[in-house]
Image 1 (cartoon, one colour):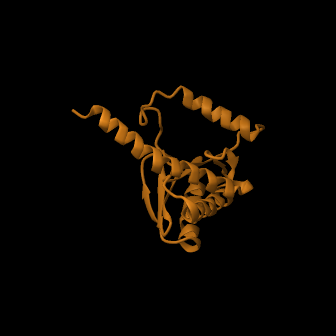
Image 2: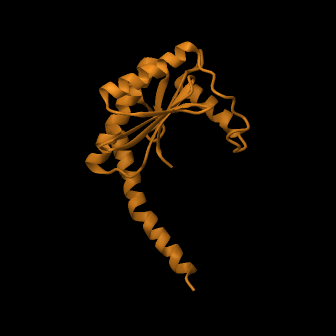
Length: 174
């Protein structure tokens, strides 16, 4: 599972927490068929312009990107010196993801880049960012908390997963 930052439009008259609860409740009824319940993306000209501005600003202010268009979302990938970051956008929501394999300074750099991208998405689209790992709004800039969380999970994955796989292999050996 990658590190995740999600973006959404706050429901009118609702708090951030209420909006997140509403989104979570909508997912609870999902049966796992990713294509069955999703309508194809239908960007307005304004939302398309937002996407083009995101691509322009990220390319200019952060570095080179590649972009793809799929039926349900637009995807931007940034393969930078600190790793790969992916942004998916459908006009009404967005998600940033990157791998849990960064520790120390590498964690600090990938999180800083992801939070710069998050700030651009918020500024351009009006969507609100929420760091799913720290459970804090990205606009509050809790980069150090995100770095700590990423480092903790990455360290666990580097040490425990190989140990678990080795244990599993030894228990199934003939």
